[in-house]
Image 1 (cartoon, rainbow, N blue to C red):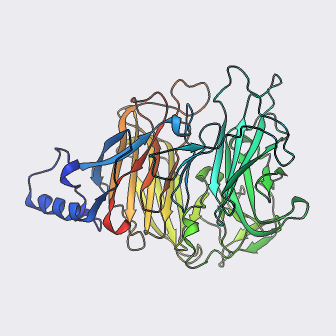
Image 2: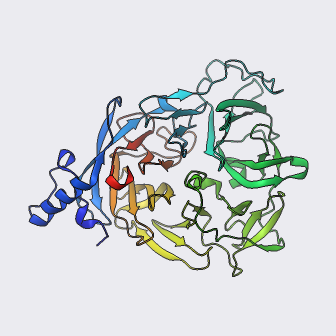
Image 3: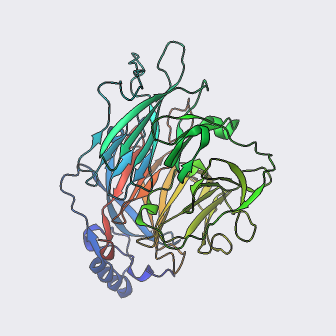
Length: 467
């Protein structure tokens, strides 16, 4: 039984009728209601109740309310690209322009330049009839507080050539800016984006406090063409990647940083970047090479084979640090996922497996985030159920430093829709996306029949110690 299982029956105002009649459950409800705080719901138009259960038990024990939003708040037909900031912003670049809320979704803003003529970036984004709303992008907060983002407009001209616009928020000036960037590829697709920890001495690519690296979902995964890199967050240049069968010189990478600043709870890129920033400098790509070894990009923007202090590779492509200095990795195999945690730079690991073989025929999409301040890990999974429809579920591990066993699961939405990623499909949910706010509340994308397009939800019932 998990560390909170005795307290995971939700407060009376949100309980469903699925409880048993035992006195233990009544006592657990009292304990839980005393320990939970309802975030004010005033100003939120759509609040829904989602079923909650304990750890890996199938029984629903209650409900938790979440504020729900659609593509009007930054998404598009098929996805949301969510990220959080240390200031508490909810970022979404699922559609054409960066969109954000600084008050847990009550109000929203969008950065859409009225005049495309800044910093020598003179190429305007044309408005092509019938192509409105087809842009999409990526966004993440850098460790210094800046926001780095890239927008992709796939159909801007009769020739069909893609166009890219860098969007940059300077945290010191508190101002947005943008820059047009052309790339040689004829087809790019949704971008993934990450910070390369500096200071950067990038030679022909320039110098900067950090670098921003953008890769193409299509090109990087299919043909490994490379990406785009910038040392000022606005002007990007083509950046090549090593071949997957390269045999580069090895270098030991410091993956044992100790406790980090709170900003490290927000610099994790989307997992499909398949890389994570290294606190000592640079960027790490686990399992990059065909033989399973890791790639490392240093602060001079040179490529190496990266190894831990014991000369090992990491166990998964999908890893990230949080502010505690803990390294989290997740491995997906079949219909199981394994959460792995190392507190000594990847030399030793403790594991927790999420086995969905009794529920799922396929893992559709998944994502994870952790928050070192709250000692919180959240795994979100969309799976093809044995009964037919796709199910969106998230597990909360509160106090992962003591135990990796999840405390609760939450079933997001109705679980009544079968959707598939990829162009040409009638019902699309192209990728999972999520984050954790500074108050410990999760923000998670999902999809059900209540809306033709994917939705996302913001958790509003939180443990008292988070607030």
